[in-house]
Image (tube, rainbow, N blue to C red; front, side, top):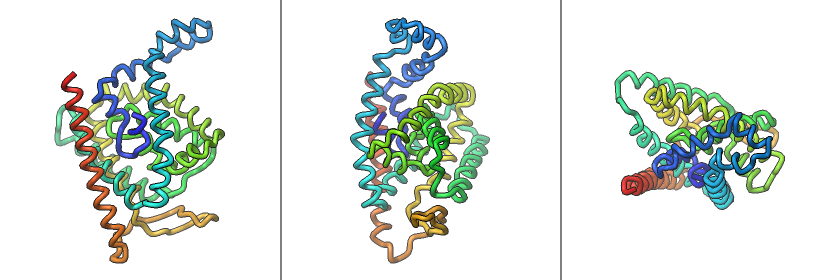
Length: 287
């Protein structure tokens, strides 16, 4: 799940689902409630630990932290030195995710296309009009953490994808690699709040409106591909000469090598996601 959460397009929630720990994960998160807090403040530690399924959560957490720390520097290097390859790979992963999560729709009806196009329009509009550089205020970093962690229970969407969409992926990755504790502390605080609040709301929505929500997410993923399209024209920059507003463009003939790398790694992302899902599904069916 740690590997999935740091790569846009691969959902930690999907990994949890197809490896058989999804239900236990959601129930464990839900157990961190008022009763659990009451046990903690009254120093009934053993009962609190059992109530929240502590061994499961800590094992999962440390596994995710290890994976994230191991991969973060590699991905930052690739984003800096091989942007067309890594964004092409992410592009392919997200395309594959759209087709994978549609399998979660129970009753495929024509009216679900309405939700798909609503998601497509919203994500496309935001991707085209929102600045490439988002706020670095503490409140926004906190909100970024809350939104990113909530994606843990969304099949097909990873927390890192949410960070890419709100232009905070490279910012948080850089803070992680440089151990900027002031930023990471606020981000993690947002993660905790998001896990205890948004996750409950999302869990309820999936139980009540699974098919419309999945269709909306598919449209959202499709529209957000604009956000990670690496061929763009810079419209405005900040004082550091970093892009603030950009617009996607078709690559030029002078970018033949970049186009080739982008297409190859996009296909690798699609094929890789297909084989990972096929392998995990076959493992799950053999249990």
